[in-house]
Length: 94
Image (cartoon, rainbow, N blue to C red; front, side, top):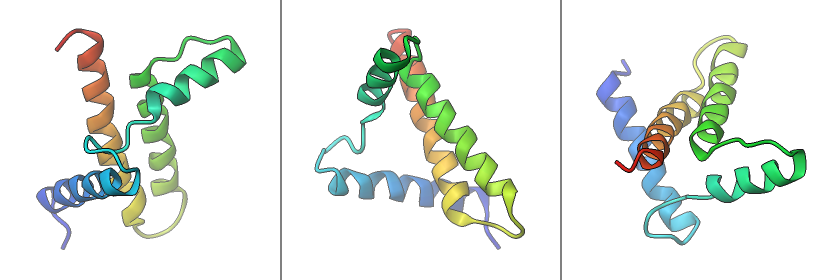
């Protein structure tokens, strides 16, 4: 049985793995650059936190779009929630 603490640990593990995958000690941090390019292209003003929220919604759609349980979508959604909150806190100097 999958428990909430198991899911949190799996999501944290994915985030740590991305640090080595993207060769940055702080992990994968491409959202700020991604939303900057998106905003320039579309004339919008999406924030980094909103970018992570977008990705979280995408993972939720994938999680509920098919029968059964898709662990990758669930675990990434948890990681994106944490990254969203981190970015939102940074917007407010926390």
